[in-house]
Length: 409
Image 1 (tube, rainbow, N blue to C red):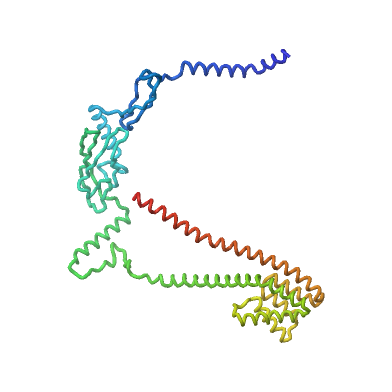
Image 2: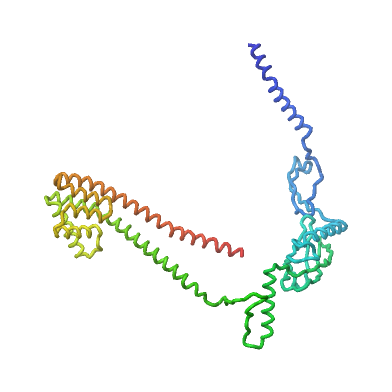
């Protein structure tokens, strides 16, 4: 047993040594490299930082140790340091101010005046003169310049109460134009000159050509008659789509009514046939009941019964029953009615008793389909209600969000 344990220890000796060395290293680091918190020196935030508070633990003030927070103000420049910082700030401004311009002697686009140099803790104020060429935000208006303009840019750099002012000479050049922009500018200048010459007249004529180019003018507020035929085409397309959509909705409505009336028709056939009437007599009885009820209560016409009425008229003219029933199923354009027509055709072969059994099975299937149709219509109704619900949700959200946003603005 001892030999076995010695063998295990020898095989795992490197793991034991690694674990022991890690534990010893932890003890050494915890003992000798532990940072000392016993210090009475507080590092102050730099000038570009904010005042802060430092949590310290004091021993000897009272019995035991006390934890308190002491305020620490940020560092403040001396006057010499402020001068040096402002000098550095001026060098930094000369690099930042040109923005995308190559230099301050070649200004063609907007400048980049900063309001502070946060890394140095300095505030900056600008003076661009009357603002006709450069405004306080550094935007340059040189579109109408015909030649360069020299300006003096005033800048005040301050730290606390100490402030120094500088004047930066700059030159604004006319805005560089592309060939197309230059042509448009020359044309507008030509029109402006013509307008001033004819200022005492009722109006003036625009040139028929300019620099060898023949011109045609269209006033923006004049009506564009091309919109008439374009709108005509759009309206025609919309009317066509509306008509197609109306036809589709009519077919869908017809299909749903046929499906709803199918169980009733089959059930009535079962009742009449069970009472001993033939298929033709049962058919005639159903049509007469429909016409009398519709005449008294003036219901809207039902597609299935109208097709049965047409089929009865054909039977009275002497058309064979099997042909009439087959045509009835085809005119309804539904699988259920085609199956019913097929059952009625088989009546001539199998007899009334066999037909009654088949119609009972068909009635059970028809009522199940009617139930499924009612479920689908309920689901579709719920789907149609989603849009009004979302609109109501949007209105409620706007009623909550808009007042909150108005508070900020």
